[in-house]
Image (cartoon, rainbow, N blue to C red; front, top):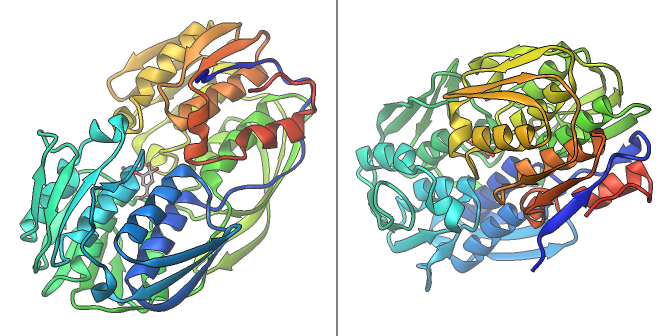
Length: 435
Ligand code: S3P
């Protein structure tokens, strides 16, 4: 299969409205919590991305009934006891969230499951969930060695623990909370910087009790969930590529309706504003416990910024598009405290450094970040390393540049945003060259 795309400079600014997929993180949790709840849950605006399809498939393999009509999913949960021993390996595809949250969820179920994924997922660190779950008495064997997938989980009774996580990771926090929900006694998890809090917001909607105290979340074991209807907000992480493009490409005026504005996720808006971007938030409201709003973006000139770890955590998946914006901004951008990017779907610091350099941008790679000198994108050849966010980021670089770029590995955008190229075509006009 030819998975290479050619992207040319945008023939016009982005003008109009973008239709977003539902938030990926919230879609995962909506399916998982519905699957272990009692009753029928209705999920609206479910993301059709590959990662969320992996989560659906896994729960179907665990015997949970689901029907999907467009972006609506009905999940018939039969409580914890409704999950059945899987007949085959549970394929988590490319999705770290699926594998890590599932590890906590299945550690307390009375059967054996085996979790696996693609080459990228097999290379990602799982010690961050295996270590705390083993402290809770979980029986998890890493068949991949060195705490890598495949993981064999022999589920049985767990006990609650206090756990201080060294990484600010919502996947780790959520895995421990899902184990804690079934454990005997109380579980407390704390993290160095608050990561996204969708789990803490959504579990109470399914009837669970938990307490949040600054950087600490405590949950009592032995809880049952009740079905709940979830309306998933638009995905800010997907919107960020369009927002970045609209800021960079002259003549843009973009409207983004119904996007999630959870403060643990809005670092990208703060960064773009600090770079001089004109971003207006309108109609702020709350939908199913999550802040949501509309965003209006106009193009303008950008300046370099300095990012620290606290801001990086709130923009962890958006650093690729921030790096692209930094490459056309006036002055230097320094990104630090972003070591976690090395263990995402690819080593994103390396992928960005290689791609930016290939397009004529001055860039230095740090152990935990990047220093990017603003300039102009030239024609060149870039690899996505089959990482959806790297592919989308360099697509925007192509649109904002002066020559054609050849991008190797474009189909991976389907992992989070199947409508990405169509959305760009609709907004930039038919003569812009896109895959
Ligand atoms: C996610 C948490 C983040 C993020 C990922 C989705 C989640 O990962 O990068 O795309 O849904 O919990 P970490 O928990 O590893 O930071």
